[in-house]
Length: 268
Image: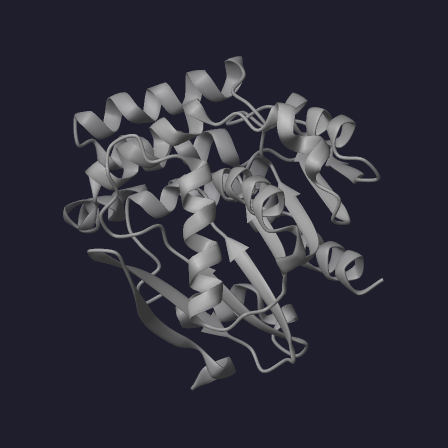
């Protein structure tokens, strides 16, 4: 299998979670995706992720977990973090580096608070410790669209908040393909995850995070803003902060040096 890529499931309570793994390295890395996972789980994405994150495959065995397939109303980012601890136990992952993007970064905060001994280094990307005006406006917009089952609207609005320049223009050419995917969307999961973004508040517990931490923000972020990255840096002792001046929320896809920057931090 390409890059040792694998699609699999884990049972959890009365439901299950889709997860993927790839890479042949001896170290473990957990990638926690953002709220977009709520529309479609990671099922079938092992090979695409192994290509997108191919820089990691030599040194790491990489894991990425969806949220559980059926979540109760009111399921929080803290609950999601506790699920990841269970997944680590089930797969006998004793310790890992952790990279959390957007809502994945919110989950990663609680993972570091509840299980610091399970994390080597922590990377928090375009995320926040608590809601702000920018994230409240964007997430409430997506919630309204999700309740109307407007898949195309969510994807277009997310893209236009996330990308800049020619990259955004290239993505606009793909908008006509969105109707092909709309019947695969899982709106109930997305709504629960989006609401969890708005209720997330780890701000007063961030001083409990003692793991080496890199925070990556984007100055032009139109989905969550830049202030959250600065707040995380101020509250997590010894953390490092890097801000991409010319990118928005999709910096993890658009900036060519993004994965190299993270690898440099993890390896130093």
